[in-house]
Picture 1: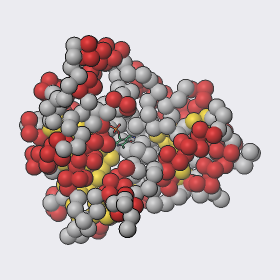
Picture 2: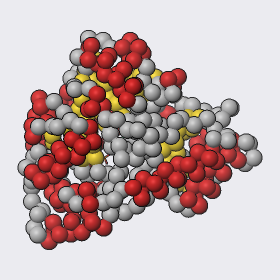
Picture 3: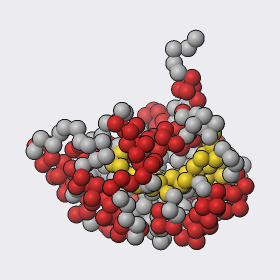
Length: 372
Ligand code: PMP
């Protein structure tokens, strides 16, 4: 008998980690693989963190999160989506990862099905499996990485528990339009389906960004500070949704994470002081630079938001074989099969200095043209 619980065998180490391990072996690679911002935590937020530590705000907080932050987040959500969440409809979490973990643990039982648009953020399928569920993939390749309501409806069975949306999306950068969200909402409403909407990249939107919470009442919205404020290591996020789901998540948090990190919660009170436009403009310019070079040689997914490009491997390559070739040329990107049941694409992250981006994009084109 194995001493490890069977559930641990249902998941494997993320494919991204394997690429990072490879990265360690390369000398000064052009690294377009890392999915995090290249800026440090803004000064206002760092200062608030220092002050919180010095003021002794280092203890446990209420499981739901500190009152000031909860009020701030409710106000921000009202401004962004027009929806006013009640006090029992919001939970401060340890990153969006914490929110996903609690939500799926609270919702998914053995044999439940969770619909996941493919390509997807890697964590989704592993968490669903860990909790005994079955990921059911909704292929979005021939709908421009958007969601075709008819295709979605065709996947719904009596065991379908949740639809997991991610817009702006990792890895495609795709943002679902209001019309698309309404189409999805109509299907979900008809079948009484809860939507978990991972909106961690919400601030990085180069086209209109609409929250699923605005168009569909039965939405559990997951938001986070990691990407917008360069706080990936500080572990802060939040969940807004139906009171019964938030309550169940809160119970689980009480006996697991206990609370989101206290210092980070106090520091986040300074986030509204941060002017994000320069960061967003910088990434938009990087996106334009990359799209300008790469669209000559690759078919790209719609680069609507986040900081990723989703490119189709050229003829004669799978996503993986193209990435192997790139790595042999000291360039790191992630093969599409890490994020998909298919192996036709690769992901580029453009949060690196412009000279490296240009070098990387030109090298990718040379590989595509068979010059290296
Ligand atoms: N969702 C998506 C789509 C992500 O890309 C990430 C981070 N890569 C997360 C959730 C997790 O973010 P965090 O836990 O840092 O908030």
